[in-house]
Length: 77
Image 1 (cartoon, rainbow, N blue to C red):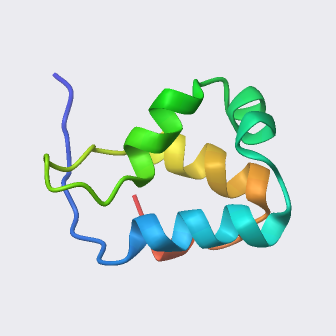
Image 2: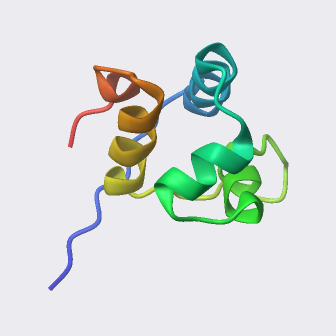
Image 3: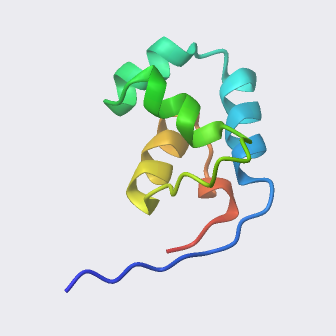
């Protein structure tokens, strides 16, 4: 049985977006290193009212690693 833990992380999407911009890594480079598409990236960081895109913890860890964010954006498993 797979257990899913939902957490509320206000501002997480803005933190991820800012970290990418600060790193100087392009969306294309980040997506290649994280093995996902730019469409998926934009769905992750979208601030749309259409509903929230859940981010798997493993994906968040992967993004943080590529961007050099040591504390995984303050999110703990």
